[in-house]
Length: 103
Image (tube, rainbow, N blue to C red; front, side, top):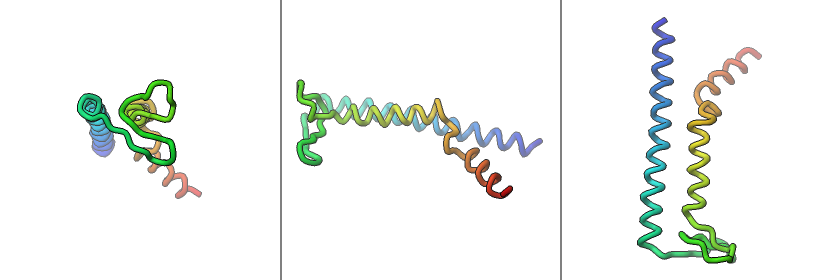
């Protein structure tokens, strides 16, 4: 019984840590992009005509803002944290190990 309680406690602590990391990611996203938006006015070329910038350049689709790209990654992090928390977590690892041990 103690082992089960310890396991549940360990999972709960890991889950809280994952959520905490996501919230830190959100705060970093907001603060850094506010800084970039108000202080810097930069753009640089990555490859060819594709330019990464912190602002859209009118109707020209060559510019893709950093906040947009980072926002996509933040959304994926949120999905992993809240929608699919056990996608490739420890439970998945344990389940796969047991599956291969039974073969």
